[in-house]
Amino acid sequence: MLNSIRRSLKDSLIYGLGNMAVKVVGLLLIPLYTDRKYFSVDDFGVLGVLEISGLVLTALLASALPQSLTRWYWDKEYAGRQKGLFFMTFATQLAISLLFCAVLIPLSESLSLMIFSKPDWQKVITWVILASAIQSVNNIINSLMRLQSKSVLYTATNLFKLTAVLLLTVYFIVNRKMGLEGIFLAQVIGNSAVVLFLSVYVIRNSALYFSFPLFREMNAYGFPLFMANIATVMLNVVDRYSLNSQDLLKSVALYTLAFKITSVLKLVIVDSVKLAVGPLMFRKLGSPDAKRFYSKVLLYSSWVLMLGIIAVSVFSYEVIKVMAKSKEFWGAVAIVPILALSVFFVNMKDIAIYGLHFEKRTRTIGLIVVASTLIALALNLLLIPRLGISGAALATLLSQLFYWYACLHFAQKAYYIPYEKTKIALILVTGTVLSFSGILMNGLELLPRLLLKSAALASFPFILYLLGFYETAEIQAITGFIRKWGRISHLRQNIKTLKGIGEEY
Image (cartoon, rainbow, N blue to C red; front, side, top):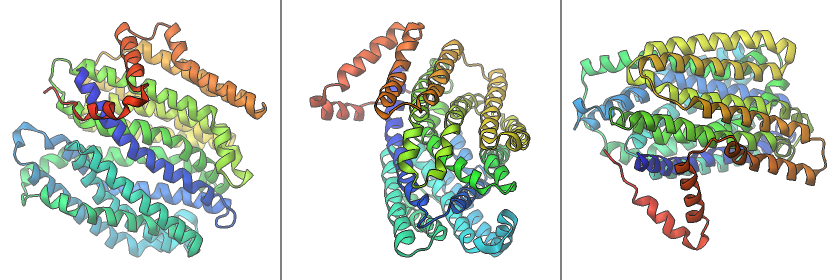
């Protein structure tokens, strides 16, 4: 099991590099997006709504094909047919994307009227549709790279795309004065370039193959996940749609800024662990140490994530003041700790839900997500009129809490895993107190404020130590890690050792 954890850590670090680059690009663009020379506060609110609309479109286009491919690719019954399975999935996704473009692009003016009550954003919405369609095709290729553990290729291609999108976005906004249209045109070009770049990889991993019985079986497995994907996306975007529906574009802008900052946690930590560990979770199924491995994945990822949550929460005041060009955005600081903590439950849900996947209980997943989305909508409608963006953030936290608990409850019935609940609770309580402590320090002068906030962040692992959190083996592993990687002169040699990490199947 130790070898599996090491391999997961290695891939998580590599995926994390790519995902970190995604957020670095996003954060680098925030000063540009909040500059009154190019965008008003309302424009930033419109951008937030368009971005979540792109997420909804991508979910609609995906049809759960990446999950179905992941479930069947390493199935022993189809050993030797991986290229055919990929071809069937890729061809289906390409056909769906082309069909959606043909249907939705002519409706872009109607969509603008429906979302913003004005036709002004018709052209921008066209680019959003195209970007989402190409991204859906790209997601299938990304799934294949994950399944084959091509973490370096995955990261390299995504870094290439991000660099292209960053440079094109700046060029279109600053030099061409294209505003929001330039943002999504850059995404269309960047996504297209990646698909073309990976075309040789796609051809090498494809073989003409189509099986109607298998296609039906994959769709029967995938359809509940498709509905769950849509509901999950709606769960994640209903807050901003709710704010927009009440003509609160400025509130959407503040909420979007806070969400962009806290989404660093999900993309860099949660998604990186998911990308690295996801295929391994299925491949470990049935092995003697599988359940202990699953339990440790939840524990260790929760620890790392909470450290990130504390860092983002306590330093959000300084980050927003540096990044936002206008003081109108500084109010976003108040909701950062709430949104950051909601990511903690997202991570626990993402791991707990594997029990339902193992037993193919996808219908249960769909019902849970739909229920969570309805709860989120009800909470937003109830809390936003009373608490504004704080109400939207609180609704997100509570709905994610319900989502996790429901997944855990039903997953444990389907496939029991002995999670270390007491330790998870220690992480949550300790991290929550430290995360909100930053708000009490924001009124201090800069130097004492930074010192106290740094002390709060650094105290997290030591408080857990005093509470008896660590096992003896874990303490030995941590000290060994520090000794090994603390020697800067041996850095190159240590990196080379990562290449030798194998698998124990």
